Amino acid sequence: MTVSITDVARAAGVSASTVSRALRGRPGVSDEVRAQIAAVAEQLGYTASRSASSLASGRTFTIGVVAPYIGRWFFGTVLDAAEQVFSAAGYDVLLYNLGSAEARKRFFTKMPVRKRVDAVLSLLIPDEEESAALRSLGVPLASTVGGARPGFTVVGIDDRAGAESAVRHLVNLGHRRIGMISGASGPLHWTTPVDRRAAYLHVLAEAGIEPDPALEADGDYTVEGGERAMTRLLAASRPPTAVFAQSDEMAMGALRALRRHRLRVPEDVSVVGFDDHELADVVGLTTVAQPVAGQGAEAARLLLRQLDEQEAVPRGRVEMPIRLVLRETTAPPRPRGPQ
Image (spheres, rainbow, N blue to C red):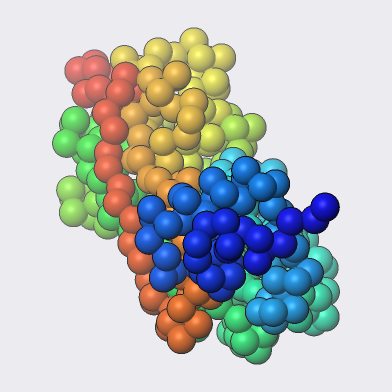
């Protein structure tokens, strides 16, 4: 015999609407009552009907996610954290992987998410036309990359401040030949490489260090790219004594290249990364820690809050904390080494 929401309400001594709000994670129900209703529902074997809830609320209970590279650690970590929040609230995720220019153009031309999702989480930076297309959906929008933009809640970090802390750490240790492995070939419209490079140049200028183009190389935000970039930097007429990698994955590639060239870290070359990747502690990498999973979870929570409150407006830009984590890959330059 099928158990209805009315049966749960009668057994719990509350109204059917209270049961509905409690089991869907909606506000207006105390934690005590919510726990009581969940226990009664489990005891009776009640499972909410997704179709009935959709008819009653006009919702699809689906969140659209658009991403440039779901195979990359950063985007995968953000997506996993966001999906956990959505799933706990009873929402499914409809994922669009827009890694190529063709896929991206096709998505924003056809807008396949229209009338299929209740909100959209963007892990890419849309241009003005793409932003307008997303706003035309009339659903809450959030992102975890880029700066503030109209109609979006953006959860992110201060990339410039983080990169400045990394490069300034190397300067304070006494390094003057400081290289940088960047991610210039990142996703379309991605501002992170630009902001982190600007920070690198700013700190060099602040320290009176003339930038050397030979000490910059593109690492494609991958381990393999970081290894290639480090190899290129080592081929310079005056190699760096320290390197700032704009991501931990590129920093790990740099460490592999240095090991292959029989150079010691940090005795011969210091390396600092950015992210605090889950393997950063394993390899003892000094890095700028950012809450990658935390950004995905917070963006998801803010989207659900907008859905629950209905009249809630986007939060603008929400900045998450960052910090420099000192480990074993940085030290002062050797007195007789190249400066």
